Structures are given as C-alpha cells and as structure tokens.
Length: 70
Image 1 (cartoon, rainbow, N blue to C red):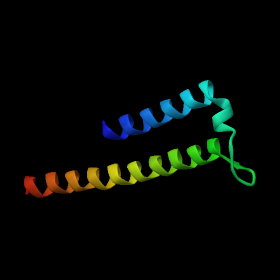
Image 2 (cartoon, rainbow, N blue to C red; image 1 turned 135 degrees about the vertical axis):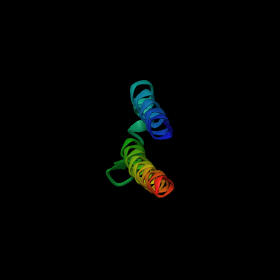
Image 3 (cartoon, rainbow, N blue to C red; image 1 turned 90 degrees about the horizontal axis):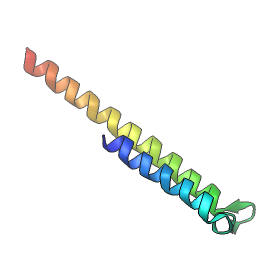
C-alpha cells in the first residue's frame, strides 16, 4: 500500500506542476537541465528505492512465514 501511495502522490504532484506551472518546470538549473528533468529524476529514484524496499520487505515476510510453518 505504501509503495502505491508514495509513488502515486509523487506522480500526481509532478503532473499537477507540469500542467499548472509550465514556466516553473521549464526553469533552467544547469545547462540544458531544467526543473522538470530534475523532478523526473527524483521521481524515478523514488520509484526504484520504494520498489527495492518493498521487495526486501516482501521477501522477509515470506521467509518468516515459511520458518513458522516448519
């Protein structure tokens, strides 16, 4: 549940900013890198981090259930 909530809220915020504040998202940060690109990189990193966290947690619960059945 937390995986979908965190990533869904992040995607929703990024979409809302892209639609309502295009000038802000197009603001240059460094060279050709703008705020929108940085926001997308943060969202992708968050997605990978939460997926890895969820996977480790799911494996831990599965291992715990297998040990308790024996």
